[in-house]
Image (cartoon, rainbow, N blue to C red; front, top):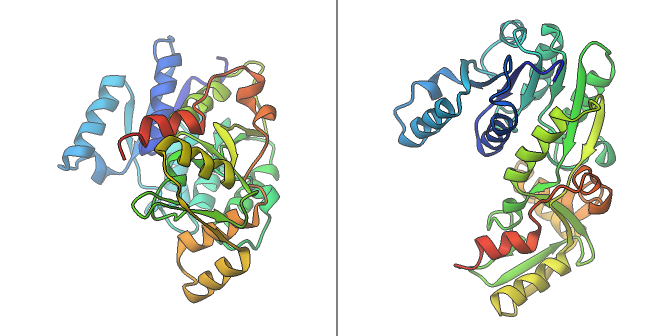
Length: 308
């Protein structure tokens, strides 16, 4: 526990809350360790009952609430906030729009933070490379290049694949139970790695606190890695139906994207259909090597789809 005395988590959405809960569980009672969360002032003051409930639960956890606005404040202003912390974990996602991920990374470096976990909880951008259909991914690569170009701040990237629940979101279009349909992105043999947000929270806490210390590394985790065929078969078995199966080829998905070039979901579909950097062998992951139990796709479906 030598470096990580003051830990700041950016954002308290689904992933931020999972990271905070797991950090508190692990080190909340360790003397001299303080866990804080950065929230927009408008969120802290919000009368919205859901937000109010989140703030109450953060206070109950003993998490210190720090006001800050990643989109609105300058690099210098954010660096002032970050300078008080040893470790910063970004759980903000892409909500801030283009440029925000780079801005946070610059502020972290300017603040001289000892260790940074950037928002890279997702696919393996190094493998996908520049110029993919999802232009937000190029900025993720710029963040990696910036972190790799310096030696003062240690960095750790946690590659998790897709959030498990997103695979089943009707808007994504892979599984649509209302229409009894399942679509393969690219081909039925294509695979995708998925991890629940709760497991990402637990594994991120585990990686952060790991001894020997994990430094300047991309760490892969996985709840499961499944082909679209295995997904369709599992759904058929669980729900005792025969879902309509349609394969969406890369050319067809690219054509769809060309018709609505700004549609984020269509960008994601093309990247996943191309099948590079979106799946890795579960056996080689941090969680498998450490013997850590995670929720697989079958367990998740049993818990969440039974009621459909």
